[in-house]
Every structure is written in structure tokens, then in C-alpha cells.
Image 1 (cartoon, rainbow, N blue to C red):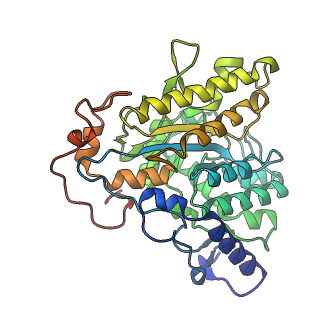
Image 2 (spheres, rainbow, N blue to C red):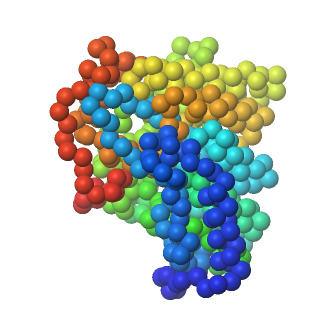
Image 3 (tube, rainbow, N blue to C red):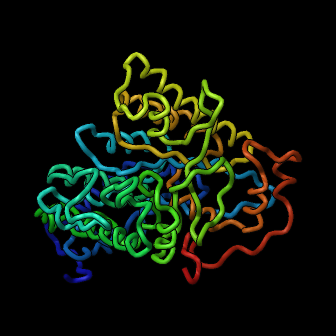
Length: 421
């Protein structure tokens, strides 16, 4: 298969260019302005569109609406970052992917969509997936059909053009014992990652949808982070990811503190926040709220749906307020496109987006954008921020707390992987 070819004039190129131009015109410059970037947001150059491989993906230049991160000035209060992310992102009959794209645009937000590779593989081609420690064609979340793949590809395309990130949730979602991801070796993780990339890079061949518009990115370069299924297997995954050039992982559980690097990757794990009505704290993920409300039953007592959604919304908002008024640590939130307990968690997430993303000094960003910002900062500043405990604002004020000498700004493009990684 040829590595790269230039798009000739025709239906596919015309459809793709129209999609790109329409998206760039419709999203405005709100994301860039909140980061302090000057001028209009960048657009992917139309003259550089080149198909990759079978045309499932394409090189289209730099991603639009990615603001250039800026280093904090001495004494400057950090922005409040909030990351909304989605495990196993795909578009189905519920239309939740497309819905939250619109929610994002309406509230100055970008998000991270962790795509499951098998959502780009049709059921009839299931045997192409050879999961570690399982027989070919096995998947605990199934596969997709042609319409589902076409719909998912459309949402991925539009999401990326709007400045959102496309990460990975890998493939078969195997948890627990007997071959679950927690038992996989470093080499097995590398194989799983390679297959996840391959299904994205060959979805046209596998579906026969050869005239469809390509995904507007090179997935080998775009893919820089992930969340493991059931938050298992993090140790060996991080070793594999570091060797493959990933920049962050979000598969663990943290307190609301400023991130540090772990095994060469930014540890951007989800966090514990207050759980209204309880004495213990709760992980910032819809699934965990559900389990602590209705157990493993995904459709519990309808009379409790509103209260359960309010608990999640209020818990996330308490966590946000604790950081916003305290140490300004990024708030990391994980979700699924599901209608558990009547869709109450989707309503809760939307309420939180609308409540926080338009506040002063708040930046609702993708993990990639957060990693870009962290890589741009003075390491001494980040080390100083990590001394603040959960909800702790500097006693002497931000100006005094972050004043003093600084290391020179790093050379090169912000967000580039560190040398040797």
C-alpha cells in the first residue's frame, strides 16, 4: 500500500474541502482567544491535503483551532483547565457524539474523544482483530456496521476540524481476569495499539466506502494519549506508550493536584471529588457514579434518576469550585456515550460544561492542549504549583507565590515530545 498520495480533483476531494471550509467558517475564534493567541484561528491549508494509504486518513496540515500555549508570567495566576473526555467514542442511534460536539462549540470548549478501534471495523471483518490472549474476532464491546462506521467517521472528521482531540480506547475492552488488559505485557500492549491504529487507517478498505471523505489527520502522529479499559493495565501500557512516543496517560486515579510526569508521560489521571450525601469522595467518571448509585444495573429505579444526575453534577461542580478557588489544579473528567439510568449522567455533564466553561480564566480543553501548556511552562513553576494541596490557595496570594526568577522558555514548537522519547 502506497504510503502517501496527493488527492486528485474529484468528488472525494471536493467533499472533504467543503467540509473543512464549512467547519472553519462556522466555529469562530473563541478557543484561540481564550488562550491569548493573536489573530484568527489557524485553518488547515487546502493546498496540502494528501491521502494516506487507502485514503482512510489524510494529511491536511496543522489542526485548526489549536491555540499556541503561553508560559505563565511571573506572579500570574494559572488558568483553570477542565478536560472533558469520552471513552469508546462513536456515533450510534443516540447521536451523543454529534450532540456533545454542538455543546462544546456553544460553550467555548474542546474535548478528547477516545476512539475504540473496533468501532471502525465491520462485524463481517471481525477476524481481522487478533486481541492479545484471546481468539481472533473476539471483542467484549462488539464491532460496528457500515452505517455506524460512516457516522462515526463523520463525527471524528468534524470533531478534529473543530480543534478536538482523537485519542484511543484501544479495541476489545477486555477487563478482569483471563486475558484482561491488566495481564497484558508491554509487547501485547504495543500490538493492541498497532491494531487500533490500523483499523482507523483502513476503515475505507474494510467497509468498501471508498468514495467517503477521509479523516483529516495522520493517526500515527495524531495519537498521543489514551485511557485503558476499566483503568487496568496502566503500568505496562505506560511503558509501551512511552516507547511509542505518547505524551500522556489518563488511566489512573489522582487527587486534585497539579500533574507530574510518570515514566516520561504526563499523568493526567481522573480525580476524586466530593460525592454529595456521602462522606467519601468519588471518581470523576459517569460509570463510577452509576455503580455507587444503582450498582451494575445500568437502568435502576426511574424515580431516582434526577437525584442521581444531580449528585454527579453537584459533585463535579464542588470539585471545580475547590480547584478554581484553591490550587487551580486541572479538573479531569471521564465519560461514556451511554444512556445509563435514563441518560441522567449525560444531562449532568452537559450542565457542568455550561456552568464552568464560560467562567473567567477557565479553559475547557483536550488532553493534548493541556499537555501542550504543561510542556511550555517553567519546570520550577510547575514544581511550585505541585506543593499546593487539594483546594489550597496560596496564603500570600498568587502574585507572591509565583514571582521570582524563571528558567528560559524552551526552544522549538510548544507541545513537541521531549528529546529521546
